[in-house]
Length: 106
Image (cartoon, rainbow, N blue to C red; front, side, top):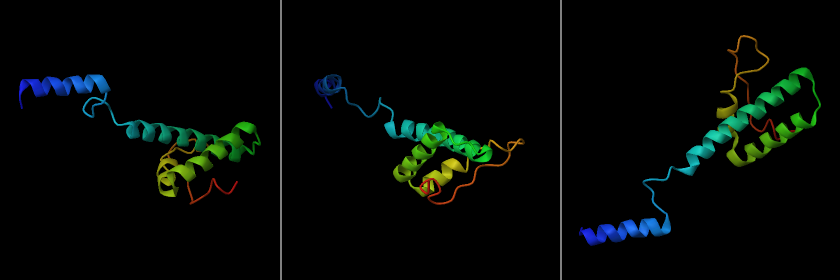
């Protein structure tokens, strides 16, 4: 490869701003944010159900979990939810349980 071809390739990258070597994969960031959102919403729903709270915030968390279930599927939701510590367990050793479609039944 000649130096002219290298410079032309570098110019093309600068002009379009597209390169796969420099940019991180967006799917990795989305997976991490989805995992964290599902964990937070599942914690809110678990606390709401434990204390019998009927609140717009708990309802919103249930609706978001239903949307995540549709978008991610039951297998991924089970993976994310069952890694979340149960907020009602004082020892912190028990994880939340998940059954297929449990947030869709609302």
